[in-house]
Image (cartoon, rainbow, N blue to C red; front, side):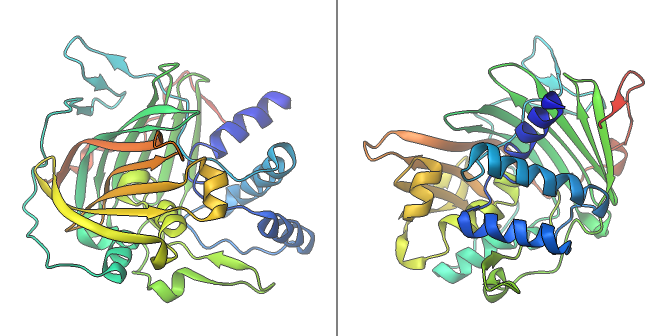
Length: 337
């Protein structure tokens, strides 16, 4: 039982829940909802696993007593070739070339206001159809490379992500096909196949993002989006936490990053986020045409980088055959309990 809880806690604190604000008010809210046995989830998470997520949150509350941390996981092993590429089990290959530039036909956008930048970053789904690439994410606890492909054309979503832990060389693979999500944990030889009700919800306004629930507690409403490359392609949690107060950040300049126009944002963290992320300030490099987070750094009071995300490769709106995404479960894998 202890091992299962440990695995569940590791998974929760390194995937979609890593950027969620979870203060004392939220802890009390969770307990109220468990007592009243009410379903309040509004996301792509299937009802079949909502109980597991609730238990995981309670476990984290009592055993960590702090906010959830900031990034992804420690799972599926890719085979490395001498060419420096990582090849996954489905044969999808992504180059790990840090000098490769973006190949994009997106037109330059006019100057954007703070609200327009915020809206675009919260609704990146609307600004591209396909994406493939890689990025590196690092914080005091995790060093990770993420390789991904995603096709959202015609509403039939297909995607692939492999997150490789640099310390252990272990990784997790996530494959999306229509309304199903397959997660493969190579190190444990386990899989989880779930059904998602929505992977690409309607656009969300700024007024809809921040609100109050039935208990009067502050809540953030999330737009549904595929669980692929989320820190960069769909940086909703990061944006909702860091950019909520427009007085705390400024548009610094425009510049080129990997050959593409980006907007540079610099700001100070709230007292809450300073404690959570061990940082006092941050800097974002935002893809101007789409709102994708290309690069991010947070800084300590001494000016040292604490958390960082750096895109190494991004190709937008290049056709990706849907046949590349198959829900194949290896024969030697067992279902995750």
